[in-house]
Length: 559
Image (cartoon, rainbow, N blue to C red; front, top):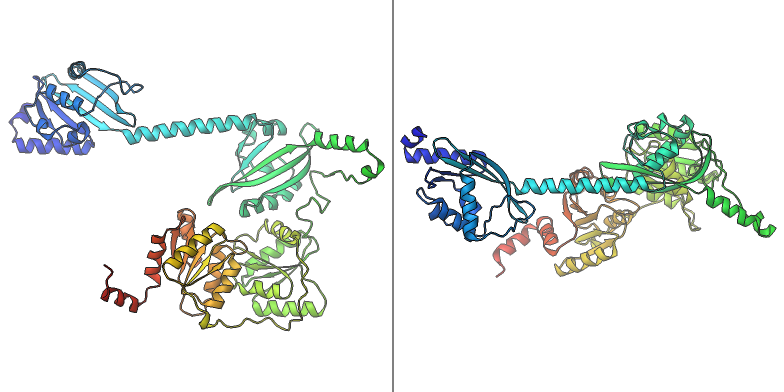
């Protein structure tokens, strides 16, 4: 300390301030007489005392008393931060602590505040106290502890459920199983976790389930399947298998729950056998094997077998993949590359009295292809890029099973689409399927003085865009029929050099992945729900205010 004593006071203070800044902590230096030698700037914010008490020569006793009066009660008792001590006892306790050769403590001056306090008394008699606010670190540790406890409770609940439960990641690898599932398979958890279903089940069984699992993972549509499963010990069980998706975009997981209904079905059969022959003859028991499904009532892929399917895509690899996957399911598959080929194919089929069951359209193709197919009375399904793989047959089967109202269509030589009338143009097209949100949009847009029209699904959004040529589109991304991404991509594909309409994505939450998907789909900007008048007004000011409006706004400022 002799060199420090001999140094220029200004240099000494600058060095100590730099030290405190480097430590991101408050530094207090005091001599053998318990007088302040140096107090860094952070001391004032932590102790809440007057700066006049932080100058060299101030008695530590007076500084501590001022801290006590300001409400700072450093007590090394993290469980009882309000431990009661009167002013004199507290000051005496702190001064005694300053004379310890070395001490470290985590002190809690408030319910949500923690301070790390390190004290040293040097052989020369000088002492140093370093105080660091570690509240954020402690909060993170506390949150981590609570999260860990919550995970442990969740695992305990899952392990005690009587239903076998398993979770797979995007690579179809098991990442979680409960005890019931281990007992069901007669395998320890280590033999399941980190493995794929093909490592445990037969190849035929996995080949049948793979497209079903892929469909649930990609679409989020839950599926229930009755399964007659043979356990490793040779016993059999009739189960209802529930499959559904959890997680967030980019981190989806596939959950499978097996519900053993053997005893229930057996009880139903017994009850039915005691009824009249009329009831017994009406009972059809479920009879399924592990390797195959024979009944169309329970096989999700049976509707694909023999179906006449037309795939429309200008991408040869996509067409090849779709034909390969569907042909394995015994489907009759053909392909068209554009709207002209699609129209010609449907015309020839109609003339030859050949029914096309479904048209599968690459979502990267223009939206009008779906309208062409439906104009000929054929079901059309738009499929996103990357989903022409194993899950495609399940999607098609699901679509084919939907009830369809019988519609008598007049003879059509060739579908045509009238050009958009510029007289019908509006300011804003709102694509939103939620009725409450529709009301909110309507009230805000009317209040801001703009004209608008509402679309309740993606297909209607594309149609209304064609009819009204809006100056701006507000596009909810979770629309039925066509998602907001698909509808935006369709609009961009149909613009054909016309000045692009601003499309603003409306997201329920701000994930970077969703923002990137919006830009890739051709959208210009993003706003978040819940919608506020200020947010919409800012969007309209940016995209709808013309040069004349800006000049007028500058010439007639609003007071």
